[in-house]
Image 1 (spheres, one colour):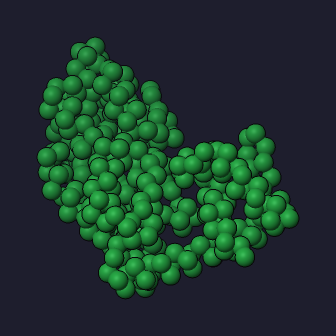
Image 2: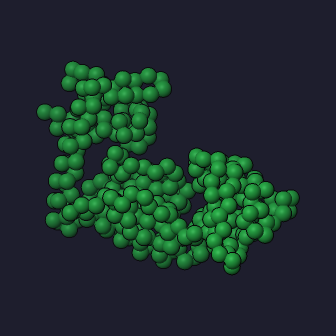
Image 3: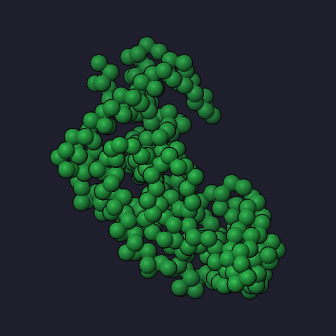
Amino acid sequence: MLIDDLPALETFARIVSAGSLSAAARELDLSLSVVSKRLAHLESRLGVRLLHRTTRQQTLTDDGAQFHAQVLRILAEIDRAETLMSDRRGTVGGVLRVTAPGELGRLRIAPLVAAFQRRHPELTVHLMLTDTIVDLLAHDIDVAVRIGSLADSTMIARELAPNHRVLCASSGYLAVHGQPTHPAELRAHRCIVMGDQPRTEWRFDGAQGAVTVEVTAALLTNDGGAARTLALEGAGIALKSIWDVGADLQAGRLVRVLPTFAAPAAPLHAVYPGGRHVPLRVRTFVDYLRDQLRDTWRGSA
């Protein structure tokens, strides 16, 4: 029975969601050869090719697409059964899959995940760090830690901690380019922009009301840690969460820019799929994050 090949089924599902064998190997913490062997074993047992692979991309074959749909159903049923049994015992166990932004995940979430897992040794945690918005259902994610407003109303979102963003730059940059006195002057400055669009709007509230300014990136990055490093290196002005640059501001490595203008709040949220039954491991983890982050966040503000 294919159920005997549960590791191979899980590996196949991860190959599809991750987009490549090498990405799946990293997420599963396995060698590429093990992942390749599991896929080859599965294809041999089924007698069909599941994936078309080239050096640049992979796509599911027709057989692979049908099989993948069944595999997801099987894995979901197994996970549901394990969750029900674990919840009935009052035990936080099973597999908890969490995603978070890279820099936030490394600095704040990973230490909390480690402490939470020590409290619940029967729990296995998969932590995926990325600054891109991940489709929770497609990637089988239990909890996403996200910053700012949320667009998907089909998910449950719980605020974990308040968060505000500040404009900042190095003293060296400001010595050369000057300290702006109004957001409109940012157009003439070198701005460090997060995301994939070189043009973006930054919004602020000041004494005279709301101000919106369109800035063009002198430097564009999809990584929060890189944006902070660029600001520290004097590359320009960045709009960063206070948790990320609070210590730099206190130490004088960075300087507040336009301190009388406030950017919109961007609270930290835990986002997870809704439904009649939210697993105990998810509820417990979200409660733990909320308690821990609300205590530690005050030191960043």
